[in-house]
Length: 299
Ligand SMILES: CCCCCCCCCCCCC/C=C/C(=O)SCCNC(=O)CCNC(=O)[C@H](O)C(C)(C)COP(=O)(O)OP(=O)(O)OC[C@H]1O[C@@H](n2cnc3c(N)ncnc32)[C@H](O)[C@@H]1OP(=O)(O)O
Image (cartoon, rainbow, N blue to C red):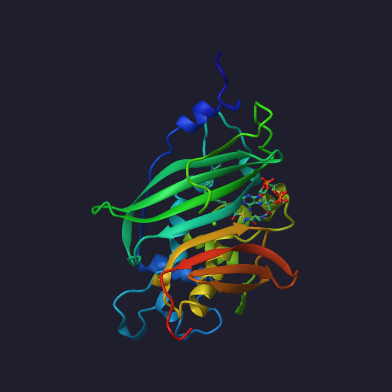
């Protein structure tokens, strides 16, 4: 029997090949990103952060925050995806989680090829949870630089399972997942962060935000993640971004630009557990972990 493209069809969906994307960046992009997640926002000569925006002390290259690689997972995808055999409303999409692995120190400029695949789909009844994996290779050397797994929470797209057991697909094993105050994000935080490439109007246009069910534009999840991981690098890694191996984060609640983010962290061996809260509402908005390569002996 023929099925229409909008009817749920797991065979069609899981066989669907997502297009490769390309990312090219330079030191200017790296610095704009760092400013967008608050680097030097409190102190323009902060010795832990100046290296992310400037050739401090004549250093040869600007250093790259590990969360910068999350930008490679966006590519052309922020405009939405046509998925055969699956129907969803892009205006109700929320970023649910981000998982990042960084395999080597990031160059301050590069051209990358991003291989994109569907890593998971789950029916949660009121929503569908879709996971997209992006493996980024340096053009020329074909060396794998990093991997992002992006979870999107598609409100209103659940309830598609055809049997009594909710549909659940994952192509990877499921065992993968001090207190510091960080500055108040500026009311313009989302407008600055979007210059790093996520132009979704949910973060800038009051009318689009209202249609999606929010009183005003909300902050990009990856901006909150960038603020949180920068705090972990400062407090636990002594400012060394190359100490970060893996990052995992789940977006628990929305953040509005201008709210104060507080990140708390706990060290368990080489894993840092962290939680970010909005101070004004005492609400947890992000939690997760960072796996680090080693600890400085003075910690
Ligand atoms: C098909 C389209 C693909 C497009 C391609 C996209 C590729 C890349 C694009 C990336 C995204 C770009 C757009 C960016 C948007 C943003 O940045 S939005 C801002 C950041 N995100 C947020 O602010 C979301 C904050 N979180 C929330 O508002 C809520 O947590 C929630 C997501 C609305 C869920 O809350 P709720 O409805 O109350 O869910 P629950 O009842 O608690 O749980 C139901 C089940 O869902 C699981 N779950 C809950 N939260 C998440 C989550 N964040 N991620 C993943 N899964 C989640 C939860 O465990 C429950 O499951 P079960 O336990 O099995 O029942």
